[in-house]
Image (tube, rainbow, N blue to C red; front, side):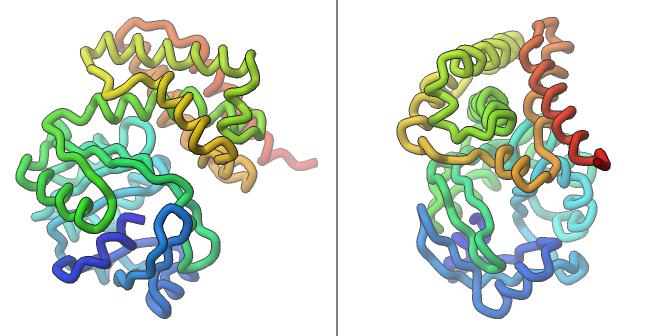
Length: 293
């Protein structure tokens, strides 16, 4: 979605790196189409060969969290003199990027989508993106502001912040409390929220995350409970990405979401029994796919 929007700008050269050869070939042949929340076709240069990517001023990492390391290892050469922003789910992605590059941004985004067919992405939800310097190896605020301005100009509203941890943790808590519930039950977001016992569990998961954020002196950007209720209203039948992964029997991001909260809970002394249980259940579900019947 980021590449599709940015490629509409006349003064921005966009390269998209993806391992799916069919998707890459379709983009190069006919352009990248977005439908749903956004309706557009643009023409980024796509490749599954990282050696083709030239030196870039900015990078946006939007892979699943389990793919962060191999992705950034493959393309790091292009960003030696650039700044790279993660807009991924969970925690721990910026740390991996910072192992390879000197200037990193912490980002959070709410637009979500899925591939309908090679070269065609369905944008399921809209929303804002928040970006800011990653504290241990920060990009400059000038770089943050320039990237935010270009993204906003392209149609993806993006806010430049000196401290974007609050936005990141608000979404982290939202995702960790809702995505695995849908994945374990097979229910869309709104339907999950309408089941009283599930809604109580969701609130319990939220409470653990909020307690950790408070212990880390992170001021949340919003109330995760209000965000969950709002999502119920505007995306009642939305199947979260983790549910889509489970239906396709793909590895999920539970380790970066609930696992990340468990790790920070251990570091801050905040108990996380519900997040530990959800993490264990999701691990068990994923392991079940490896069994031979």
